[in-house]
Length: 341
Image (cartoon, rainbow, N blue to C red; front, side):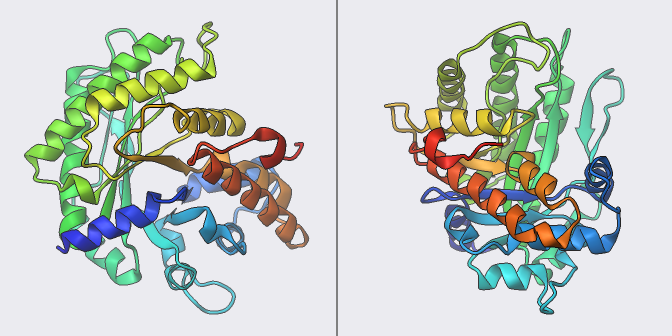
């Protein structure tokens, strides 16, 4: 394990206004999104779509790396290069999703624990050989009556920490993602409480497992009300509560925080990130994005499986990537960064 190399990779992913593009949807999830738009759910179309997302000229100005799915990291572009080979040539860091999904947590109704630790050491070694230099593992934390439980928080934090330690052993930067879900009627106070508890548990376990915090990227949710909540919370309050939560629970050694969008609209995810980077108190870590749908949605709808729409779809992706890059610097202005649509 080369700690200095891990630290350099983490900085490349999240430094200087760059973020992370998440294109790690599982095959069933990708197929589901294709089906809604009438796109044939074939491996050929999945390859073509992922190629579209990663080959826009200038993407590396806004994005430091991209998270791939197992199928994608093994595929080739039309010019014969593998996706990791192409990305490395473009100055993009290849990443890989390594968890096997959230499963029901025994004895805890309504809660889940993410699995995938069995055989992970060998899989990480293979992914490193294939070109990956960072990995992602997503824990899922639900809010509800009596939730999250300490059992759920501790089980997911322990799994995240073991995954992170194995990643660093294999020479991969771990993205540590404890996602407190937006689904539900809960208010912003409950979200802040649950996010605080999740971060406390995660960093306790990272310390227990000997993970070098300078060689990770944290991927948390923002502190927001539930999707079905009747609250009307100002965007600036979202930014302030999120910042206060992070300052209280995230060590300064962490080089960067790359937020997930978590079901926010494209515009809200960008607006909140921009406001976070305009708060006068300068945080010890970079604040940037690791968005999937919030970057991809308009590109996918524009492409719709038709190769004639590829250039227009790439333009949509680049527009979103540029806007979020500017938001990571606190310089986003909707009037100039977004077009109508």
